[in-house]
Length: 280
Ligand code: AMP
Ligand code: FE
Ligand code: FE
Ligand code: ZN
Image (tube, rainbow, N blue to C red):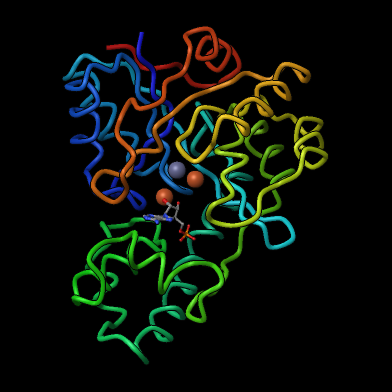
């Protein structure tokens, strides 16, 4: 069984339509794929139709933007009720704040680069959760940078003068809201420190008390030491462990299935989630 539990489509900052992403997941030999767009479930229905057609199991999920003390935290939610009011209100608030923040960043960038808000919107899918990758795509389209990586390294990183923060809920509140929605909360890439600060173990313990179910351990932004620490933490707190690609299409180097999750971890997610895994 090859299981990849973290991918993005054009419903957020991936580059493929949900149906194309699912088709590719089946073509590369995955048995199970999760669609986890930032703060959005808008790709679920299209992905479900494609999963049935291509004979692959689908886990419906999302990656919830959170922040504590200025540290950006990503929380994966699996198999939650997409209409649950508490979680939906927070993700919609984050999505709308992401849009005004992107406008402000575009205004700042427009002082030095030949881009406008319209150029940014042109890079985003209909109803997409707007993120810095769309600003990166507009900068690339303008000829300022060769690819997203270069745009992030020079103009879009958190300490850049063009950067603006957006609203995001506290991660402990988000864990509780995911549970209230019947979802299974798994902390995404907890020790991925190349892009900014991360939570310490005391704070992750607080998230466990709030209902955290698991940790994403096998992820390309974790070195061996980070993985070993996370595995030990998960064992000590009876958390499930996942491995995933965090695939974004051509927007990042991450390849589908480059890290995978063991079937027993998926079984724990399915047992705890409000929705079923969609079988082919
Ligand atoms: P935002 O959520 O708008 O602050 O933007 C962060 C998102 O940008 C993350 O979810 C990543 O998917 C993406 N990202 C971060 N760094 C890079 C990079 N160097 N190249 C491509 N995408 C990136
Ligand atoms: Fe992303
Ligand atoms: Fe993430
Ligand atoms: Zn992600």
